[in-house]
Image 1: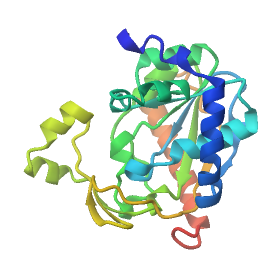
Image 2: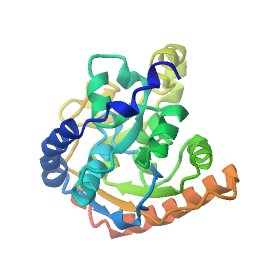
Image 3: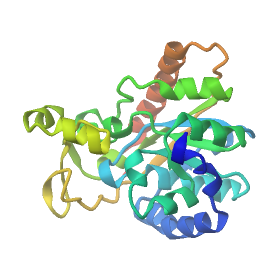
Image 4: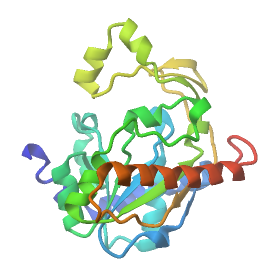
Length: 264
């Protein structure tokens, strides 16, 4: 467990309120965000499993958090599991105080045991940089650890699907082959726990290979929370397949409702 022991205990109501107040105008005005189906969240602990979009400037968590706290208030914290790289600098304490905790089974178990809602993006970097040509495809890259976490904690999985984030710029490729050819995979895997070198096109810098960071376009973002999935069967592969299937059906439906890219 090590230095993850106190991650969950660091959540601070006041800090979280201030962050939500600052981010609300961004997600509500700039991205015109909507979070639907929040009543599908059970009263007790649950693991919310979502697709991830938007590259390095993803606003998925902010959209969900604003919708969650506006609907339920601050009596039950929302925790989000984050990559280790978020906790390597001076911002680490800020993340912990606002509910972003290191992605470990210990942290997830502790938060769930406290009755919290825990949000996880199983696809991580693989999902958040999926090519625009596959923007409406649910693909976690074969990662199923989220199912094991829910089974061990004996809590339901609540699928959630988002659309719009992958319209904030043009995602050309995850860049796995490029990373291999440049010999960067080993270094990236060691420093950032990733083996991709994503290539995107956006505003104002145009072509970007990770850097420089373009400003996301004001795409309308919609998140829909689906009905809980029971994990009592203990069948990791079967539960994972079911979760991805219901998410894909919901994402297909949201995609059909889009009239134009960015405008929504």
